[in-house]
Amino acid sequence: MKIEVQMNRYRKEFNSLLNKYVKQNIGNNTLDRAIKYSLTIGGKRVRPFISSLISKDLGLSKKESFAISLASEMVHTYTLIHDDLPSMDNDDLRRGNPTTHIKFNEANAILAGNSIFSMAINILIKNISKKKNDSLLKIIELLCNISGLQGLAKGQSLDLEMQNKKKSIKKMLEINRLKTSKLFEFCVVSPFILSKSPSKYIKEAKLFSNNLGLIFQITDDMIDLENKNYQNMNNLCVKLIRECTKKKSFFGERNLFFQDFLYYIMNRRK
Image 1 (cartoon, rainbow, N blue to C red):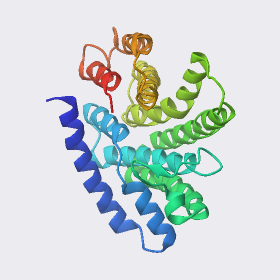
Image 2 (cartoon, one colour):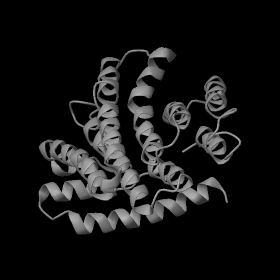
Image 3 (cartoon, rainbow, N blue to C red):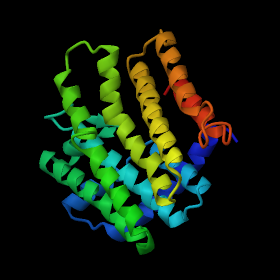
């Protein structure tokens, strides 16, 4: 089955579960509506997709798999809400729709982002078995680490510092690693932690998620810039793909899907 078909099928399944969760757990005051809006206005659902495939391969339950997938998408949504704020990137549109602060005002957007982040942690606590508390704590620790000074927050700060400045490739990759790869690290590495996988698998997962994030963001940047010369960036992406799949135990020949998935991400044009 083509990767795009798989992703579309999964996106429908994930959105259905997300809508069910929203209906059961979120009310109808202004903040609730801002949260609902932000979570359900669309998205590729790439992070939940790759997380669900890894979870299935490692034998996690559907409940555990969805908890990790939903938490990763919630943290992603939280970052988008805050990135769009007037004090950050000051965007009016997100996925073709008004950004959260445009639709619900800036204060409610900030509160919605903060609420969604805490909801992500709560999702993990409520849906992962108490028998796996040690692994749960490790996952929550990972989520906190990738979100703060060593991850998303630092990446956004560096990005703001570089606004209206020409970025070197080194600086661009550093920002992409912090803003994009770190979130992929959570959704890729968490299933391995929860399944108590060997340390070599977790090491591979960190490398795979780092390179996936770089490839994903490099491609996004090229599309946004309508850059006609992809060759240099393509060469870099191919190097990154080989680095995290060649002769690897989990992401290598054992399951070539992951290599094909990286090439799919590299070659997309929208």
